[in-house]
Image 1 (cartoon, one colour):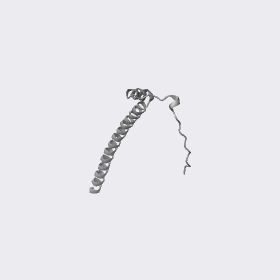
Image 2 (cartoon, one colour):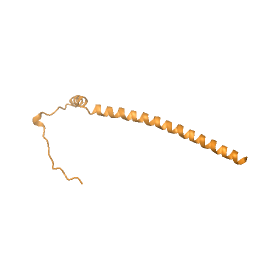
Image 3 (spheres, one colour):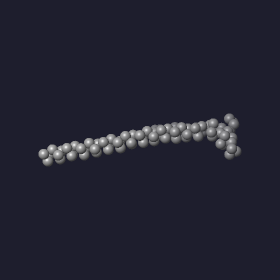
Image 4 (spheres, one colour):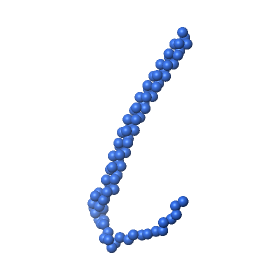
Amino acid sequence: MLLALGMLAWVATRRTSAHLIAGQLNDLREERTVLEARKAELVRRIRRAESRAVLIPRAEELGLRLPADSETIILQTEERERR
């Protein structure tokens, strides 16, 4: 009788523990979803901020301008061997 009560208490404790862990796992999954959405929003904002549509007006406000074709020099370097 005592052994049966002990086993029932053990089973109840394990089930309660499993239920709590499952709840924590669900919370973490929801948090991950929120963080992934936040990351996607930040990446979108970075791409927008790097665009010519944003950078050119900001550069012009600082007194900068795009170079003329004759002012552009393309430097070529030897490609190094990749190891």
